[in-house]
Image (cartoon, one colour):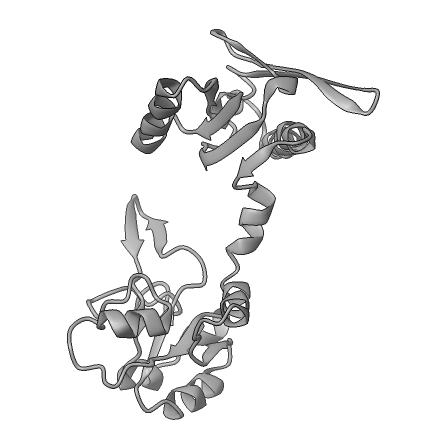
Length: 243
C-alpha cells in the first residue's frame, strides 16, 4: 500500500495517484487536515509492533499494509472549533507526535521524503557544507547580524554581493503576500544598515565576471547557487518592514 499525504487541492498529487492506479498499485490519499475530525487513528503497540488502522468515512488503511509514504504537501491538522489557545497548542503537538510517531515507527517503509530529514535539509548553511563536500563550487558566504562585517565582506568582493533569505521568500502581511527576490546589494543598501542587526541573513559573493544586466546570467546563477536571482524591485528582508 502506498500512502500519499497531500492536501485536497493538489493537481500534482492527483496526477501521481492516477498514475499509480493505472499501474495497478494500491494507493490511498490522506490529508492531515482531516485529523482528528475526519480521520481516526487506532494504533496499538503489542509484541514490539504497532498494529491498527487509519480510518475515514470512506475507507480504512491497515497500518501493517503500508509499504511507502509520499509526503507531498499535506495541510496541517485542523482542530475542532472552540478550543482555547492552550488547548489547541497542546492538541496540535499531540497530533504531530501521535500520528507522525506511529507512521515513523512502521518497519520497512520507504519515505519520500521523511519529514524529520526534510526538516534538517532546509538549513541553507548545512546545504552549502554538503554541496562543498560533494565537489560543487560554493562562493564565499556570510551569515551574520553584524553590519560592519557585512561592509567588509562586500568590500572584499570585486564582482559584488548578493543577499537572499535563508528561509522562505514570502511574507504574508495585511492580507497580501510580499515576495523577496535574491537581491544584488548596492552601495545604497550598505550605506543604510538598519535592520541588519535584527536577524542573520545570508550574504554571498557573486562569482560572475560582471553584474551589468537586469538579470544574472545562467552561469552566474549556478555559481551563486541561487534559484530566484533577479535584479528587479524587491523586498529586502533584512529591512522589514521596507524602509
